[in-house]
Image (cartoon, rainbow, N blue to C red; front, top):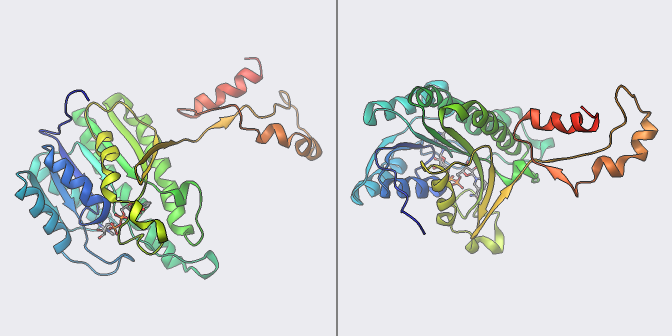
Amino acid sequence: MGEPITFDGRVAIVTGAGGGLGKEYALELGRRGAMVVVNDLGGAVDGSGSSQAAADVVVGQIREAGGDAVANYDSVATRDGGAAIIQTAVDSFGGVDIVINNAGILRDKSFGNMTLDEVDAVLDVHLRGAFHVSHPAFQLMKERGYGRFVHTTSASGLFGNFGQVNYGAAKAGLVGLSNVLAIEGAKYNIKSNAVAPTARTRMTEDVLGPFVEMFDPVQVMPMVVYLCSEENELTHEIFTVGGGRYGRVFIGTNTGWFAGQGVVPSIEEVREHLPEIRDITEHVVPGDINEELMILARLAGG
Ligand SMILES: NC(=O)c1ccc[n+]([C@@H]2O[C@H](COP(=O)([O-])OP(=O)(O)OC[C@H]3O[C@@H](n4cnc5c(N)ncnc54)[C@H](O)[C@@H]3O)[C@@H](O)[C@H]2O)c1
């Protein structure tokens, strides 16, 4: 098993940590010695309303177990809210080492029935929310030369799910944020990964159907908390976690079909070569855009 992983002296922010998955992350980080900012707006699944109770209960549990935690009730959905969350970490614990972007809401509807307000509400919490928190956090991490980000993506964004175009777009957007933060953070020892969880929470209790009992949220926690640890060297990766399964999701590309340098094929030629264009038996998982360009360079003989 090796040495136990601890978080002594580390400051962790977990957004949306008043319940569900975020609560499990916050409790474990607290148990293992981190100073935890438990952020939660305390609203309903659709984002309406607010209450301080959710965050307060989790802070109480961390403290009862001998840990150190402070509550923050700001919304990630605004710039001021994001800044205030970081300020809470700085005022209470002197900085920020770990950010888990976990806060989330749902406004599910088929695209034809969805209003643009329902699109905005979901993008504001998941995608802009992650920017509002990560932007000020990244500055502080750069100065200290250390940081760990875990962004919460979703199978809905990675693979698609009926009725979640707003949510899917936001969750796919978080993968883009994570990938670029991983590249830009590399020289500052800042690691950034994304996790797509599946868990029985108030958000999913109606959708997991007969499988609901299989997905205890605490089973997602070990992967997420590992990625927040000092010894974690992984970055720029996406993990899928739920029901006891711990796996990787990757964005890869194949060799494809090379028409030739400077050649403009006809659309009929494209049609003819669709099998090669689409064949994914051999693929690579590029670590950045240059690694994709290398494929073309190889084909072009350069
Ligand atoms: N449960 C799953 O199977 C599943 C699957 C894929 C992704 N996710 C994602 O995991 C994350 C956690 O979800 P969960 O399942 O634990 O649901 P949850 O509803 O229990 O947790 C979300 C938390 O975020 C908080 N929150 C909402 N809006 C906020 C805001 N503006 N500012 C601060 N806090 C806010 C809520 O109060 C709530 O406590 C979400 O990002 C969700 O999209 C969950």
